[in-house]
Amino acid sequence: MRNALADELTQLADQRPELAVLSGDIGNRLFDRFKERHADRFFNCGVAEANMTSVAAGMALSGMRPVTYTIASFNTGRCLEQIRLDLCYQNLPVVLVGVGAGLSYASLGPTHHALEDVCWMRSMPNMTVICPADAVETRLTLRAALEHNGPVYLRLGKKNEPLVHQNIPDFQIGKGIVLRPWGKVCILGVGTVTPVAVEAAEALAAQGIEAGVVSLHTVKPLDTALLAQLDRECDVVAVVEEHSPAGGAWSAVAEWNAENNGRMRVLRCGTADSFICEAGGQEWARTSQGISARAIAERIATALHRGEMA
Image 1 (cartoon, rainbow, N blue to C red):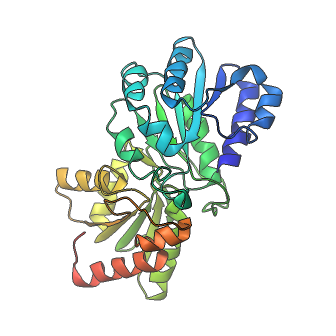
Image 2 (cartoon, one colour):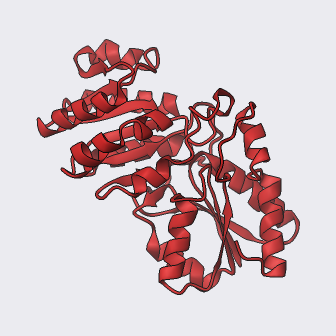
């Protein structure tokens, strides 16, 4: 995903002289092509994320379209006040790119786990939160974010994520993309874990349970028309995400369900409300947190047959 982002940024910068990239001292080789062609619009701001955010705000006020780039947990948590007051309060068109979403950097420990970032960004007025599912959606979301008149948080994975799209889908901020038609069950995949949601649907199909899959790339604003349709047509809706219970996509869908007296059961397939202090890769971490395809399928089948509530 990060390679797709860098390539797309380089191409877009050819067409948009106002586009600039600010890095928090990572991805320097990643942006070599960008720097070769647009050296005067690449800024290594060092390990000073809060300052980088304020610099981006100043550039946006000057008519630029800045994109800040660093690790997800740092580009959000370390600069919450600057995001809130410098960007959101003034509704400035700055794109914050958080790379290494969720458990992408599982082996590096809790400092690099981004399991609360969606909650933080969702809570900010004027902020749009997008979690693309693969490299195809990464390119589309970047283009859409740069056209959006306000701050946007893009939550990306790392690299070599599986593709869920073989063709270019229609993309619109706030509108989920149907990957597989639903029956009584639908799985909402959020971000880089969406391929696992597809695998879970395939496992359910082998049991005779038709489960749809939607890439719920935009967590804020929610696709409320989609949720209303799912509420009418599905018994069980599972939200799969690499995020804690508080304030993530599951929380957003559950809030909508409660506010609208929804009838669908909303299951949560995400991480626990605790730090993960053991070392291991992303697949190991997902399995330990119950967000493997097998665990998701078992949880949905149980809920469907026994009426279990999330």
